[in-house]
Length: 540
Image (spheres, one colour):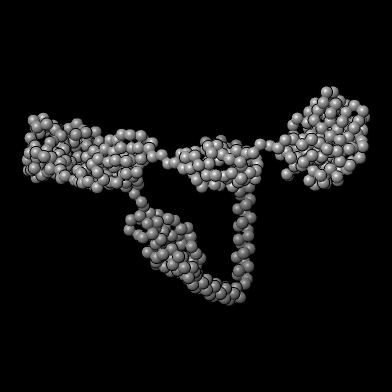
């Protein structure tokens, strides 16, 4: 409780008293003014009251005209509902979505404000629209195999599935009383509340296998089926058991087996029919061809003789009808073909080779000189030899060498040697040595230009008497370093002194060339095939 200060309370009381006096005086003055106004005041008051009444009536009428009736939107499509809201002068408010088991997807479930109520123009109408039925949750079917019935029921209940217990069945894989079969494979996704049927295993039952050998297949199957055993069959030919009767059974009669075991029965096809085949004609066949032909005919075989030969005899004879599987004997003998060596004397090696090839023989001849005529062969013409033999071509002896003869000029030497023109410079220098004043020599098919110098001699030759290949090794160099442009070919050499060396030796087309430097030498000079070709072109 608050404590009031006495002084403050007294002061407050004085102020309140003065306030009351002021209000009373003001009220008295007001009453005097009203009395003085008289009828004039009364007339104004009546007019004012009439105006006020008219204004209130207009306001009430305006308020009544702004109210609209809320349409019934439940069951309409969302778009249609929103259109009706707007057409009614109202506004679309919040639109919520809900699952519904009774209202189709996309239709209005409820509205707020409710239908047929009054609402001010522009009022927002909230809608709840159906999303359709809510999809049931998916769950995985548990593995029930091997569980007891109660365990399986609990597992299904935990998974929110409905357990359906089926009739017990026989099983060889699961112990009795345990689940051996379920209608939906474990791990399969299904809807909550789905039914899953399972069955438990019956106790194993043993039966004794009956003896069905010799019985007809129909009787044997009936006997096995009667005691709960399965049956499978295979067929075989038999000389002792009638057709369609049992030859043997996979499980011996009298054996105790689990009910449901499958017994394999071997059923007789009766006696095997005799099949015959004709001995094929394998005469002149090689060993591999003969054996292939006999095997294809369903016959076995034995043979003798030369395995590299061909068939010369068959027993039983070709065309004889025998049983399939019979053995056929045949003899092989190598057939030697011979031919006489043809006479190719005077033929070129090329033509003689064709003649030998036509006779089935091989000619060994000098392929580097295919146009050179043969003088004979070894073995000689007319000799009988085996086809495919090699015959060696023989040539006449080479003519005696022709000595070199002097000529007055290069042209004279070329004319007498029978070769194309041979042009060389009047002098050639290598290092400090100059070779000059060439004189020319010739022999059959060869010309030479010989240069002289104080310490050595340079010889350049051209001719057709010798066939040589281009050389890129074995080339000489000189005692001192030097560079020489030899007929357009730039040659650089260096090396140590030697007694003598050949500078170059080469062949070009049908001609052969050599350039020899006698008296000086050195290490190998490097030249490639292009260098050789350039040097040949330069000398020509």
